[in-house]
Length: 391
Image 1 (tube, rainbow, N blue to C red):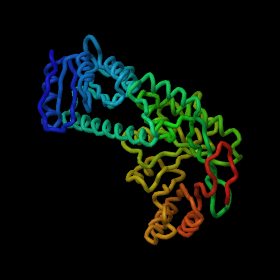
Image 2 (tube, one colour):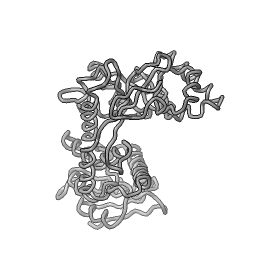
Image 3 (tube, rainbow, N blue to C red):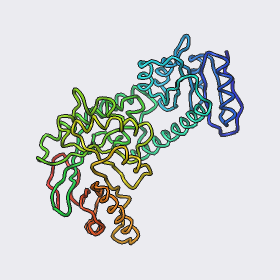
Image 4 (cartoon, one colour):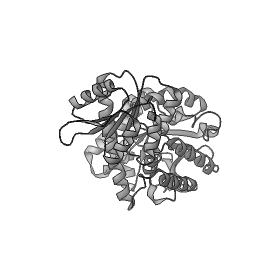
């Protein structure tokens, strides 16, 4: 059956639908067309692969159970040469194995038939937007690195990531008490020797493209566990985590690298985590707390979901992002805002750590606003050793 294309306005997001049931193709195609998408439909995955090689699409929507080539087999083959296009899988017969395979090969979403029309339209629109955002991020990261990141070739990317993983190590930056003039702990920061991945965000984006996020997290935690053997007694270790790691036996359970030192570890969670990831993380909290981990909400002042996160995660610490106080020493309005934030966190009995303090003037203005705990190059740059901070 040849591909059918539904007309749509110029510039409309393009959707490829793959299903062996003509009625499904017709109904979903008309639904998405009514909502402004440009739709192409094919009845089998082989035709879908050929069409994708010939034309570009913003989203692929495919059934899983099909003759000749299943939706999962289609996804595996697609990811060999195209790591960008978001794929939504649909099925009437879900299994755990198929869900895990879908995650491994980077499916954007896994929908159970019958799908409510409104939910389907929302999922397709969201997938198209996320795909566009991912391409923009990749372009920006490539420009920052000065060279192209090899996303288009899975084998090349796997080789680059394998080489990168071998060089991953931790560096530690002190977190200090300004009033007591002592060390509270250190934040573990990811470093590697591959210039393409100067930041954790760039490395995470690449790892997610080929389903290696879990492997990246496990490698990071292993290296942190190895590199922190000489941490000063009584110091805390702040470790940034992905919100899904708690659900994947990476933090607790047999072989979890950080569990032996859990009572010294504070898990840093970004303020912006929300939705399903926040729900999954909140469900894992009893296990994390039981193992001895403490929790910090990171990047406070940059997102809008913080209050919801506080209610669900009950953090032991919060971290004030530098963007919230930069220039505080010469900005009375910012001084009042920061002072109010410190008063609010004091009422919650949650210590607030100012991140990224760079100058004596900033330090003194933060002290005047009620600060105590701080982190930044003023006190010590990240180092492979647990250096004594400058106080």
